[in-house]
Length: 248
Image (tube, rainbow, N blue to C red; front, top):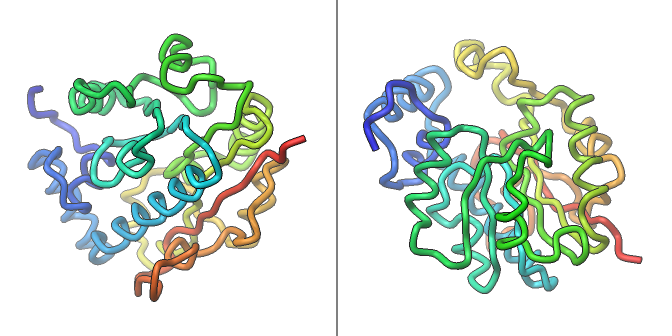
């Protein structure tokens, strides 16, 4: 694939995670953001570790099919690398990311990648959904919704999560994260996030889940969500957790 002219958040995160699927334009953007805020690698590695623990928890509860929105690149400990017996459909709205994801997963029979807008589940290809998330709407699945809430206003986010709740079968799980007010002290970095970016106070997180019921862990800084050993010593930039659609 030809080198893109514009940086991509997905590829910037790949850079911070130590991956290989990024370009000089992404590294330059990542370095510029670090110049305005500070080192990001540890924060995004901590967020990816949270994803791994959340996926492992869902798989441990019997989930063997996952639908991932805003998936970024399917590498560096992403869902199918954690839930090694599950099938996974990754989706994104960025066509370059989708194409790169499809290249990465070209040899996989457990994971696929396609276009999908979380705010309109009808944009997900039904054939891909049937293949990689069999039983969608009829048996419990894991919905991964990371990196998206900060780019949706409250009404859109609440509607989106409610539509996903309605579509998912009882017993399904939602892995979700929210951006805290960490960047409020870094106006140059905040400006780089664009006008759609929304920070929220922690008290706002749980109410936005609507009918989804958080597990007993709550919505907490991701480093403190079921940590293995001592929580990572990183800023509380992201809060997250698991929520369920109760069975029965």
